[in-house]
Length: 313
Ligand code: NVA
Image (cartoon, rainbow, N blue to C red; front, side, top):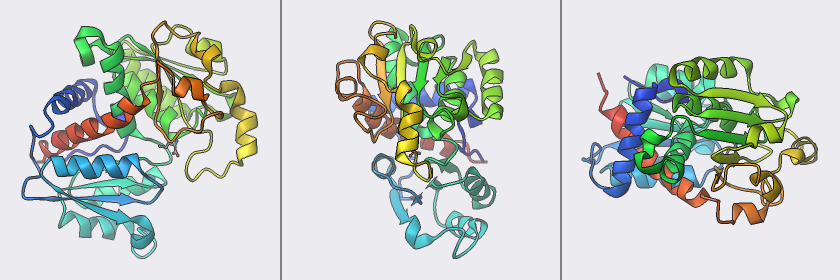
């Protein structure tokens, strides 16, 4: 039984396999029907969502299944009953569980008791499905004729909150893909040291590398992709003014983008706050691929589900 709780739950070879399948499913959307029946997939949402709800609901439907959407405010998982009891109930009736929630320990407990594959649709610590979509997008735009196989050796810079879920997932998922991952963030918002160490360990195997720096110049110079994210993540209690003071030097504007490689792409998981972490001219400009990225959530997650369901034993 395999789960996808964090980016490094897929080995480099497995990640490549999922991304290649995602590219194939993008070209032929109904090629795989492992949920035909329809079998249900529970999609549990404890935090706000648009892309995640949409892409998993559409994806499960296209795989022949039934997406059972559960509003976390109604289910109150861990409040009305334990995560473990919820997992046991779900596992008797659905083919897989997809969960957007708070602390990583919750999804780990779900995976320990569900008896079906569990997928992380964002926690406080990781957003691994988003990074699969970002890697597919990067492969399409900067992978050259090799596509997914062209990812190793590319450089991805991330600017902003280095301690949030996107930063951690870029580190782990990017290193797994053989990318040079550079995180530009103020020292007080550095990624967790154990995640940096794990990313370095993976990068040593894949030929990638990891840099965490407070210098925007060092992070972005020559990069093939520049990514950013909201300054205040869901569930983060940091006040907006405090975040603005901290992260304004890391705003992705035209001057910063000009430091990247010619033709570098701009990534953002969305929702975007124009004028905060990214300027409107950059987000809406010719180098932005954010709506390809949003669409690729669908293809990447379908491939992931097909892959996980194919490994039940
Ligand atoms: N870091 C953001 C990602 C949103 C998709 C958050 O957790 O709110």
